[in-house]
Amino acid sequence: MSAEAARALIAGLVASHGVKLRRFLLLKLRNAADVPDILQEVYLRMLRVPNVESIRSPEAYLFTVAQHVVQQHGLKQSATPPSVELSEMLNSARAVPDVDPVLDLDAQQCLEQLQAELDRLPPKLRATFLLHRRDGLSLEEIAQQLGTSVPMVKKNLMQALVQLRQRLERG
Image (cartoon, rainbow, N blue to C red):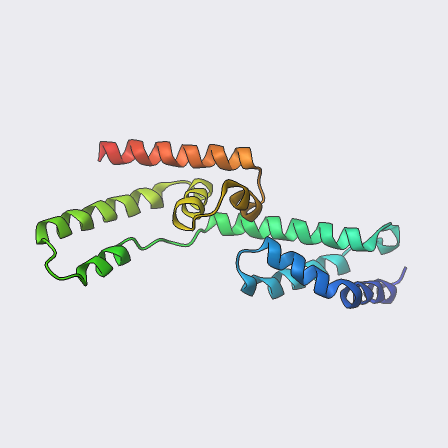
């Protein structure tokens, strides 16, 4: 099959399954703004397939490629999780009148220590912890987001909690 024929097959898949693929990605991705980038990566990977004629079910192959791209995207996201500025929480508390300055300073120090310990966690543990505790995601949602299994999410969450507790108790 020529390169033009491969492009025609991909163009046909885009035309016939583009909307369905977008919906699939919207369900899999946490951030809808990532969908166009993921779609582009899926189509680029499809265009790089050397023997397109050997694909028995192009639709199934398309969605398999999409699932792999989503998983890799999740891993990249977990390697660089969004930072949590816990000091913002303290700033909102300062807006309340009659705050005890001693308690305010103590809270500030606790938040700074917690932020420092969160930053020291390995990326996967930190991402799992933040998705669960900050974002309120279930273990199943975290597994889907990070492209891993629920038992692995449980293990990572437990390790994050143990490490944080040990470090905070020492501090």
